[in-house]
Image (cartoon, rainbow, N blue to C red; front, side, top):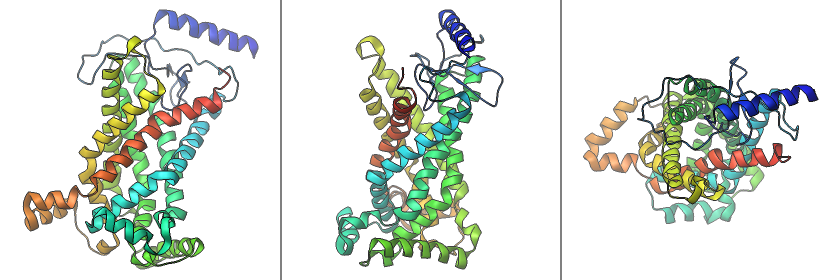
Length: 373
């Protein structure tokens, strides 16, 4: 095993001298490389600074792929790498959503579905239960959603990224486009996994019964009761209500988040001395990129919330019909009122979510599994 590791390290060093092109994979050490189990080719997963942009011409030369290197700490083998990434993504998302993400989403959904001022919404949430009211719907559906949200994106991104990097290595796409495509496709997978859980959480958040005073255990029991009532009255397939719109939205969400974050990172690297960004600067870029993405994708987000709202139960209406009705009722002002409400909380939530998945998760992964480096 020592000879094999030595041989692999030597081969990797030779490749680094020949060509230092590559792309850093999601949740991967900046010093390590990752091999896709779906391809016989090894693709470098250690991103280096590049001046390529989405519209830049791509050289039609095949880039040499680096060999797999084994972490010196020995904590993660190639076979366990995807499981480790899934675990880290799920835990980081769970902590983030539990601390602040759920509260932002709660206020955003209520703003979208009621249109009431934030002050009124906060008062209604905390009137009977105090600050604990902000976590209505988090247990159990929010917890399940957080784990599924991070885990689904993490494992999908880890599986899809090597395929996109192979296109980059073959000279077919730019490095930036490969990363944006991987983020968008992983977001689509995440959308189908999350849709049923988001529907159940939305139903809990918008149900007036949860504005009444009740203990934590009573709230949890009532949340399960809402889930059972939805399935019993509307059928199991109602859990996938709006799933296609939601999955499409997630593709746009994550494509735009990665695109804007990468654009801002490249601009920042041109200003920072040495061209290397600190972890804090990367977080700032991700936050700004996520914020810009939220403005672009908010109409789709509002549409999903309306489709899954309990008031819409039993009402079949296509997204096109929803938009047409809003325009007929109030013109452009009606469209703005129906599909741009809650943009403040969404901007905060999406910005922090992008930081969590694009920056925090890789840092946590490195801290836990590559601490020997």
